[in-house]
Length: 398
Image (cartoon, rainbow, N blue to C red):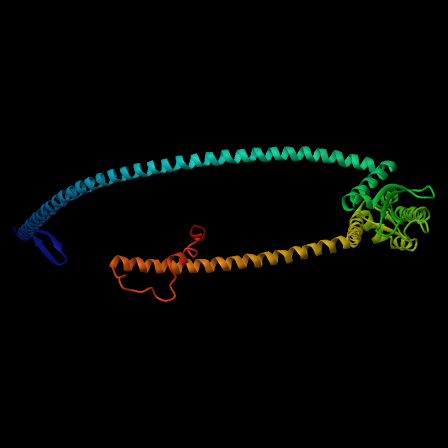
């Protein structure tokens, strides 16, 4: 036991010390193990308690969860019932809406179909009108081409102007106030002669006009061509004015002026706008250039003059008719006076008849009440024979 096993520093360690140290160390180790076991047991107990507590809490939570689940299931069932009810109501509402929408859509489609049918019918009518207008335009274009061909021919153009002149004159003047193709004493023949009241000298109208120069002036593309056409137009119109003055202004036989008829307002406006010297030359030659509107105005003036002349010619007849009318009015006045007298006499007779009727009524009342005995007839009341004439029984009394 006293055997030294090793030296620790300067202190020798024996076997007994080693065994004692080992025993102490084992005791301490045992104590540590026991403490560890105790601590572990306490921890296990605490953990068991904690687990039990947790199990209780979990059981409570599970119970609450089951209760909540049951409530949730009830609510879900209630919601399912409500949803089923709402779904049924929604289905009915949707069905009703669909039916109403289908009905309205059917009506709308029917109205749309009717409107479409009406529109198609109107469209067909308009297309028919368009076809008619197209045919009319075709006819009009043909007439325009024919008119263009007519105006391109000098003789045909003269006939066209003469036709317009005759239409205007014949529509506005009496038949005895004009004459077409009037022949003068010098053998010249005018297109139209207008006779004014109280004057045997006719007013002559010429319907020919040099249209080629105007057409060339309008269609000129260059300034040089325009000047040439302008010179040509001045010369042609001036020559025609001179011919009219020489042919149709005969002293003592015709009026002091003559009319040159231009059958186009645009040509007349062209002359006044660009060729004022031609117009002045015609005025100096006592030839008045007139368009269709100015000729109509002149015709209206002549018509008014003719009307005044006829009124002057018929003045004696008008005066005699006025005298007869005044005599008829005086006669009517006398007859109305006589009729008024008759009405006055009738009113007086009716008043007297009413007076007699009143007296008869009074006497009848007295007779009914037996009050007539011993009464004298009041003064001024006529006897029955005197009242007969007032009652319209004069013939019976006589």
